[in-house]
View (tube, rainbow, N blue to C red):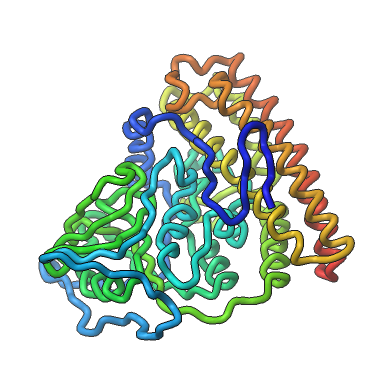
Length: 421
């Protein structure tokens, strides 16, 4: 089922096709700030175990290649030419086409050549990212990780819904001493089995896909948001510091159960209280509290220090861009999956989809106006971010918040009709 949003048509089981950004050259320098700020200290990155730290200067190579030999995972064509090995038909990634939550775009790309593909709309819906509102507390700063999706909670939800089991390898705390080359044998084994790997390439904190290798695993071929369809070679020593392997596949839940679980995640995140872990650790605000805090930060921005304004300016457009994409995916996901329910439940989900469709048009109109949330697609800079513009941004967020409230109300009606408390 398709959902029309302005001049764009969002289709459930196809790539988004919505040009979220103008040409890539406008984004490289600015989005590079994301990685720099995240490395600087505030990003709450995927932390799912990893391995023990290898001895300095002697990264350990796993003796085994723990990749499933089951034949129900992939029949992808693995090509070999000289010292080069690669999986055919792994789609390229780009900001203009693959959506702005890179976890969803990269995972959809990695799953494409497998026997059980899922598109980015499904990843966004099953993870709850399509419905999520999140912001950072002012006293902790506005971390660029606010809108990202490669966290254990979201990847775990996708795993449960799709049947794919993921195996994570991460050395985030090690910084430049991550020694991710210790996983090279595991990566080559996965590629040989026709299973691409989602992760970070060359210390950039945007998700990409490793789909090939050269020289026995000394160098890997990546799909990268900044490279489009260009071949991107990354030495094994520069890989990471996080990787996610397609480890196994099992029968997923029914379409009914998958949708109900997604609705439960959406409702729970909307009403989720902020939880400060203490010890100076970063945390997030959720749901209505997040949007209200975002609006208040915009209202008070004139009183912030220059450094605070710089940080808020970046988080403001980056989170808005992700917000636009997420809500377009929410409209598509619910429209495509409402048929899994019946009666009052289905009607409530269809109504929520219609509300998200209306909200998506509101947000897209703001995005393309280039008069609010002025990211790199607008050609404008922080000097153009006036108090008057911030007032317009607050109004747009307030209008979007009303629609978020209405959509969540319908989602909770659907859950009630399903007997979910």
